[in-house]
Length: 132
Image 1 (cartoon, rainbow, N blue to C red):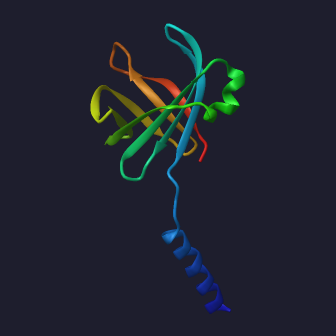
Image 2: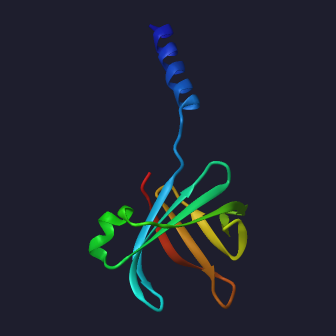
């Protein structure tokens, strides 16, 4: 009996070690109050090689939110560096580094974006929900 339990325990452990894990995906949808009003759906995938992919869909209204994948997204890629308990996302568009970096904190079921206020303290600006 002990050998069967031990064998089963080893199989479960090894399947977790060698199993393929998918990269976590986070989703956010909200109004975008730029010069033209529209609704925006944003999806971010954090890859295991310290990179990320950000996809952003602009749609006309909230009712189209469920069918956002029918539209063509704006895609950005970048690199991730660790800064204490936070991550810094550096964006690269068309192969060139942009001037903007995001400060992010990863939780089990969400991803929070932060920006520094005038005193230098970090204020939460956006919350993404983990979908995968």
